[in-house]
Length: 318
Ligand code: MN
Ligand code: MN
Image (cartoon, rainbow, N blue to C red; front, side, top):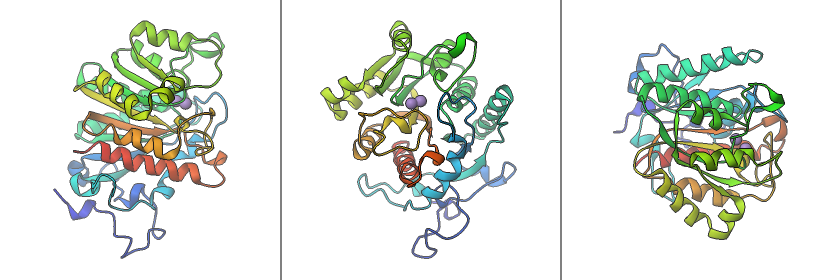
């Protein structure tokens, strides 16, 4: 399958820095474009950081990632894959999310994803803060009718209780909510890279109580990433699984442009190796979240995020 319409223009015909930016220079299709029917994997942005607990700015993530992603070329030389030739990929634009009304924003996001799923498009979301992921999980759960597994690469579990004593959803608790709502099968969920200071241990405890395999950074570094990912594959198994990648999984030396950085994490190459190890899983959707361009003056975090997106796109294909 190699549809010429869905190929990015060659950088040898049109320089990669030229033109109107879209994710990986793919065609941009509006919601009513009939060619959406032919899309296999759809990139889209959730420009929203209304659930951020500390440094904001992830609302600018999709635009920054789009721009940086124009540097991506067609071939993954390490894996031998040409992912735009083996799947029809497109940029489906951004969800219109209210910056001031959380309920409205989350409902719009879930509706956007549901419309994609109805067209049999595999979702690839660029955040936005990590609460955006909950809307993708909810839409997938409604479509599939049963919970699924997940691989989370993040420096946090995002299993925290609500802050400030309220019922608030934040970017610190999308997966607690997703497990509570029955979107995720916790026994088929694995989380790796956790580190940093914490308010308490309630997030880990929630994970342990529900059977989530949490691999804190000490375990990851002791075992090595190859073993970590072998364990991740074992936990997730052959069934359908979602992959969520929080850019703060990386050490802030490599990815400073994010809301809640935690020191002592993997480097860029190790993170890429982790993503490559996911190939062959039944990946039903993926995201790259928490890139905050205002905290990324060098642009390195955006570029790293775009590069991880490309590796994830490859991991989603045979
Ligand atoms: Mn997160
Ligand atoms: Mn995080």
